[in-house]
View 1 (cartoon, rainbow, N blue to C red):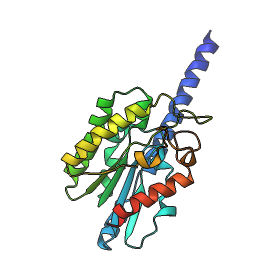
View 2 (cartoon, rainbow, N blue to C red):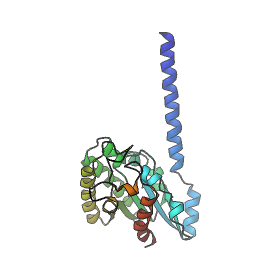
View 3 (cartoon, rainbow, N blue to C red):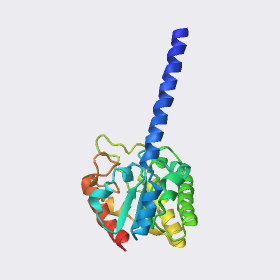
View 4 (cartoon, rainbow, N blue to C red):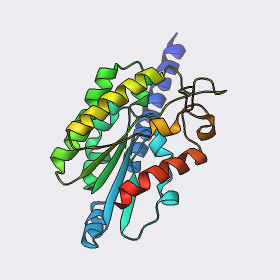
Length: 225
């Protein structure tokens, strides 16, 4: 009995340690030295920030965006929900003093059963907070991407495109009312059956190289504007 209890305690401590290490790694991943920011501002370089979940996390900005006058930063973290960005707002957004911010978030909320209303309200909070803290920032909201529930080995899980479309529709209205640029990538990635096109994914959720090429072609004009 005592050995079993000891084993459980050791397992719990190990789990807490691993979680702490992962949290620390995520913190470092979304961190940037303030001296670098100051140097960029002094050199008149624009700072463009991408933030969100794994779809942003896996987006290799250095591969697709190579500018001398623009620095792009990626603070997307796999598995993140809207509440995670709110919780780590200063680390993931505020410290960058970005000229432009591209936000793509919400698919993991939907997968966890969060109501559409809560996803929308949390997303609004992120965008409005970014504007309040940095009135000159240009805000871009990227529509949540469709999923494909028919791809073998799919990770779409409980996500439904009907929920995603509803969130996108309401966020589009919010963006139009608040001078935030809404970027519709849902319609560019979806097939005739209202599923994420198989050419653009490898698991029904995440985007492959072909998909990121299309996304980059769509986003570049906004970055270079």
